[in-house]
Length: 166
Image 1 (cartoon, rainbow, N blue to C red):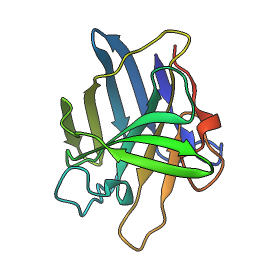
Image 2: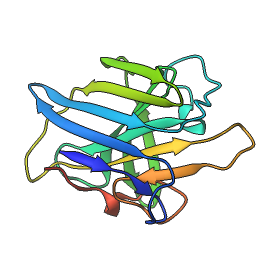
Image 3: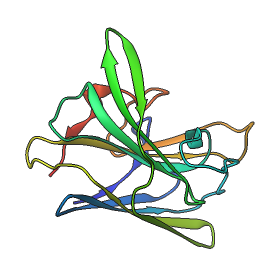
Image 4: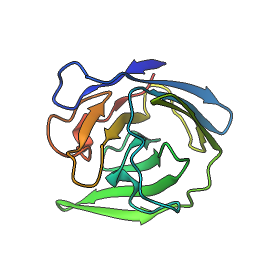
C-alpha cells in the first residue's frame, strides 16, 4: 500500500512525502520518504517531544477503534516517540510506550528516509490508520503539516480521520 501525503489543509503538498506500508509477520513495515527537509530537531533522546521538530508519524488502530490508537514518530536524527492514545470524554490521554522499535533513518541531501517495523496486529478491512509529517525550520517557525488523510485543522489527533488500511 503506497500513499502520498497532502498538505493538512487538503491542498497539494509543497514538499513531497511518501509512505509505503507492508504487512509482515508480527507487524507492519513502514517506508517513509521525506523530501526537502530542514532536519530541525533539537532533541537528544527517544520519547522527548520530537513532534516539536521534523518528524514522520503514524497513528494505527489494530482493531479499528478510532478512539484508541498507537502513535509512532521518527525524527530525521533517528529518535523515536511512541505512545498509546485514548480519547475519552473529550480528553486525549497518552500512555508512553517503549520506543525501541527496529528502525533506520538515512539522509541524502535535504531528504530523509525512514524504514521502521512496528509490532502490531493487522486485521485486513478492520485496522485503521493515518500518517503524517511535521516540518519546521526552527523553534520560532510555523509547523508545516502533511497527512495521508488531512484533518483540516491544526492537530492530527482527529479520530474520525483514521481510515481503513488496505
